[in-house]
Length: 464
Image (tube, rainbow, N blue to C red):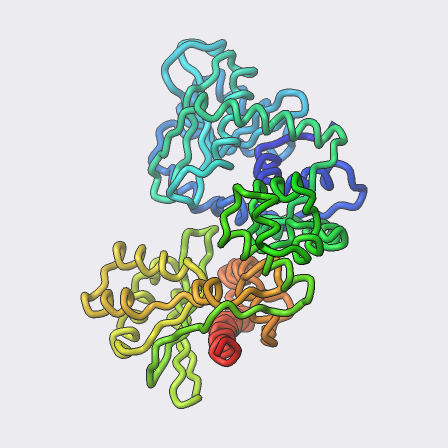
């Protein structure tokens, strides 16, 4: 029987069909290990080791074979080592790989102590997928040591331990585990396309099947509950939804409010007709000079290394890269970018999505920021995605910058351009210091800000 690991829970949350295809398809689609670590909010080994370097009596499991690694883990547990790094826990077809096993006082088959599990993650908060994995570790530990931990932990890159109670999440974990076991045994999960599915190596197969079946899940940001309500009312396809008036749909599904139902119906029409629908004018501030802004990060190292900005004045574009070539230079790159912003106090700063604002706020708190620059960020940052949501319905399932920019006619210079690949390029550059790779990263970032500019101009022209 196919193994179930902590990664299986992550895959299930992102796309249950990922678990199904992995278990029942002869063709293998392995993920790049760094990509999988990236998607699970993991970190590079050297970053993990720094986060736990001050822990006492640290024992590292170094065996590559899973069975041998399990035997080595058991030996360390029986010795009572304080901290076990890269341990492996096995019970039949369940295999867990917690980053840390920490010894605590108590009673177990091992003696007057037992072990609790923790993973080292980039996130500074405990997300549901981490809790599923923690519950899985707790159940494995219960079978191995005879005592079930009551708490799970996530360790941040700063070395802080974030705790959560296992029993508060256990019922949801059990239901999820039962569903995973059923899928591994042969049950085909229902299709429901979301942006999270993009992370699956089977995404193209899932999307192709959903689009061929004209499924409601291809609507942008539709909720599963809404699909179920529409399905119960006999509206099961994009064409069926597009063909109905909002009045009829509200009568059939009175628990979906008018504004939301109108949005869903119009999305269905846009997809059916393969044409965008203008909801209202996209309004932007008037300015003699504009700034377009995009950040490149290496989440595997908890490192935001490039602040890319493009100025546009009188139709002329100029790209500026504020680059940190190593984590120690992160603050310097930020300071240079802040100085740039201080020299463009009246320019709107256009970006796409929430990430740039989150990093700006985090870096201002971490490295400092002048009052004048802080005011400029607060006053001038404009999220193009928010403007799109209010002004245009696109005939697209996803509204990422790549999707929207492609729709309006922009293309990136690199055929393999993506945020995930940019992380792999940067990791490659850190190892080899190949100038061509660094130039590729800078070109990708420049294309991102140019794409943001193109989308903004398209919105101004087509929503009048």
